[in-house]
Length: 145
Image (cartoon, rainbow, N blue to C red; front, side, top):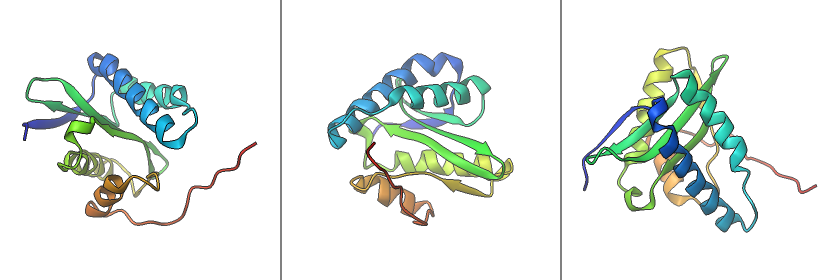
């Protein structure tokens, strides 16, 4: 297992975060068999990184960013904008660690709850959110137009 740290993202991390969002977009498009609107995710994450709060990265022992988590506070609700970890590090509880860091930060800065989405087929994501205390409170719905 590699040694990794979760730390606040900075502007210097933005090029690597963009690469990771691109990989995430491709994975989702392949899974869903349709294009995924990564430009919206990029714009949202860009604003959070630019603000200097709400985005953390997982950095390996070679100081390469291998994952990110971005959450944004609106009122007293924290919205999960995205969590991504390179495939080689999945299943090692790094996502749990990133969610815990984000939860502790926003809990100390006015957040009362976190809302996010986990894809139905993302078994690892379901296990991770369960381990750090999330509960299923509804379903995301979608309609083709």
